[in-house]
Image (cartoon, rainbow, N blue to C red):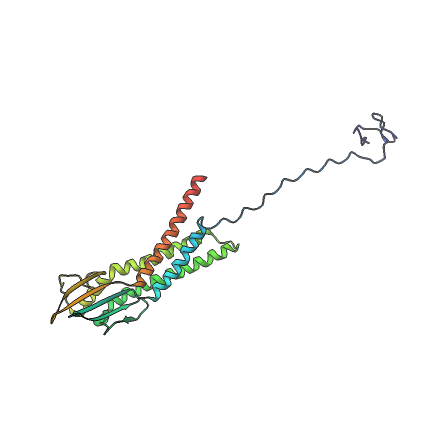
Length: 261
């Protein structure tokens, strides 16, 4: 057996260690070596935020949701007429939204685009409304997944980014397409209805999306006209720009991460 003090081997039956004199006990063995301490396991890293500028991004996303709702509910385009005669004003106006309905105000409302065959205008409005609705649903889905991810659920960052990018493209495309196509659609409706279109030689809603014009109305009266985008169109445009800023901040933060690595 081995001595418990000096560790040297002694024959069985020896009462004391022949090297150091320590009393031997039958069956005694070398003391066990102290256990090797296990390496400390580092705690899991905290879940990385989806966006580095988390607070600013959340504010922008909320703003985009509210502005998109405004784009769905409020008028997109309107026209105002003011006939002035000897200091007296006779005003009329109308506007319309992409979800349907004309809105008139002030005096007798002038006719909307439906005073002629409005098939092209209606088709444009339908296409724009679909863009905005699908973009809005993508935005809501992305915001919902961001919320679930913040609660600890495993949701890929790429999925959320693609949803926000899709919302950006659709929501921003809606007001741009409307601005580019509206006057052309009105002009085409006149051609379809009357067979010809006479250019008046000055800006009109049929030739310009945004503009104004003043002319004599006869009898000493003057007609002031003004037309252009309304609050719903502006809301949709601002919603798209908010999402564009979100994606810009995300791209900027990812570029900074690559530099650090």
